[in-house]
Length: 282
Length: 347
Image (cartoon, rainbow over the protein chains, first blue to last red):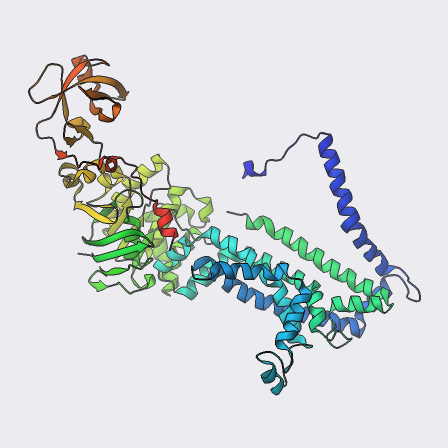
């Protein structure tokens, strides 16, 4: 739509000042500090050697590999769970009118506003062995939630909960029910209508939400910190590893892993930017 | 009778969309549900299709009680005002949808889709996406899609409402010809009386959730059951104590027994037609003005112009309906009731 993308073409002094301000702000706050991380990842520090070879070595040592594995496992399950529930909850919120719908909608945004540390504490209270509703039962079957991978998945899923939903809901509202009703009148049952009509309509929003969720899940720290043992080979995710190594004077490894996390986020952003225009297609 | 609607009642909160509606829709004909926006006609259509559930009453389609059947088992074709195209599928895939759901063999589907695209003149667009079609083409695609499953009845909800005037007129003629070819029982909703009069075999006039009259276009136009039907199916004006069509009034320039005396206060010329606004003697403001239409030639031969004194009388054989006191508002085309969109959105 040509008229909605109208921008001011005049380049007066205000434009120049604004541009300088914005670039300076971004540089001081984001670009410069992050570039220092990249720089440090390759620079010799104390006893550690610099350069690309040692950088790779630090990334492939067993502790680091374990941490990345754990992070990817947790992110995978959190994304999967949030995708399935996200689509379900979005459909419920948009297509049905029921008592408490607005409350539900507000509750879904809660994870965005509550500090992840609080999320972690809450999960520890609810799911620790011998505590909460299921504590005794979980202990009796020898299944640990807290201080184990399921706890990490739960904490991450909790924190990322709104991301998929908030992408899908506006799209579902916009596409309306006409196409779904047409499919029903043509003989499709609920399942067929969902797979053939609803899902293709929200496809790009869903992909966008999944990418955001994945990026957020990989970088989650606060909630994970509380529910994990956080020791090497024992619940240490990539973000926890960065913090542990940093405070144990192994800064070189901390920077190497930090740089990889930054690169993953940048790749996610590129993917999202690439997907965005497709969302606007008629 | 193809569709039997018995005692259908439907409300949205305090708003009564349909109030104990009974109607029979004949087989193989083109029936129009005509009425103002918010009058309940779309709701009735959606209840017949199963897209909406009535609070009370029953619907029979071809002798089968469909009241509690879900839409996918009623075997009706439904066409929406805004096309409801499956945006991610090509035109051919859109038309094939119902057949693929029914798991028909591939060659049969292909043949049927080709036939239907031929019928709606979209053969050369088979591999385009709906977004690459014009509004009229999209609506023809939607019709082909609905016809593909060989529905017992075809239901169209304001099918031409989103199109511009010219395309609308073309599609209207085309729908009439298509129906003469295909003969499927068709019900379409419209608020445009011209569309209903031109296309339909039978018209059901619905207002404020009730059926006002059912009949052929001629019956409705010539023998309206009440002032609402008369007002909705064409222009009306008040002459004395009666409603009358503006072209059914004779204008005299000399005094006549029983005629209403007045003075021309405004004259409008639209093409061959002249529209006179005559203020009866003793009337204070323009609310009481009588509208008279006549041909330009006739107006000129009488020497009518603003300020001329005239005597107005109903033409012989003209249909008049007594004015219902206090209900003058019903006569305007824009009846002030809540819009249909708002009513269905509340579900």
